[in-house]
Image 1: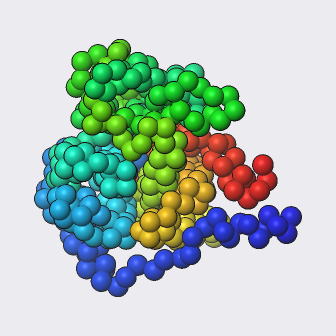
Image 2: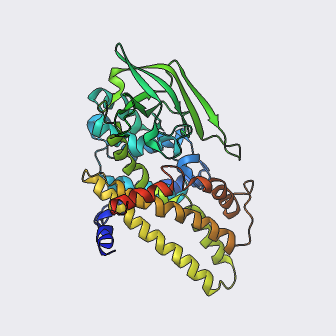
Image 3: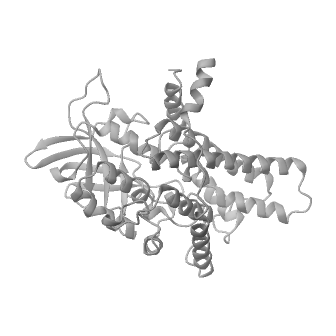
Length: 393
């Protein structure tokens, strides 16, 4: 047990403090968001990085230099730090702003292109990402595979000048809008002695012949997810991402970006803020309710510190997959607990047709909550990753 406890701190990078000059940036973002709200440009929602698709809003952010912040200026970005981007991101999420259109491209595609992309790929996609005009999806999950990412069956066979891709990806957020996505595919026969061998990544433009995008509607009727089918789709050599056979290492590096950001614990923050407002208007909030809110706010602060630590590690060039898995597991459970507390502490029923406010935010959160602990790897899988990192498996 003592060895296990010794291993635990090593999973989380050193704490990071936000530089003082970022207070000015935070104030600028808040002023922008207040002006947007006053103009009625959008209505705050829960889980906005999945459901809030608004291309015009993304372009307005791009025009202000708040997308592609970490992309070097020679590729159309702004050469700022991951902590600058963190400040902008948490303000957008806390406000419930519609960030889904640019989300994947800005969060992980841009940084991944800088790590593994060719010069041609960078110049082709990065300027549009920074302007908020180029949108990406992620092609990892497959039918009948659950969270077993290594069981990829979509294959790419070598042909003259490139690769011929056949297979299916599912749960691809925004594929019906996106221009392209990164696809994890099998480029060599499966080796039972090494399940991670023979996997590669391709950069797939979704308007290529042979690609069919089919909606996977939610029970609410909303359309965020898609099934993407590839029928002998030709992918030219210049769209190979990174090195053939290195797909597993590249994907796991990208997951540090996907799993550790503030979106993993702020999806329901607008509801928490609205809950506090409702309780503040109620007469005589009891001590138990105050303790419940205090516990939620304290955990929020802890999760933010953990997430910032991972952001600092990413800034230094590390890829802290274990710490990212820990943030995602704890954060997504926390998001659901905000929903539970909101339903118990206030006698207001969720109502998706209500005016903007608590009832509508609660309905929005209830509808999206089942996906919090599934997307980006189920919590059970993440705990397995952490257990291996601690030497327990």
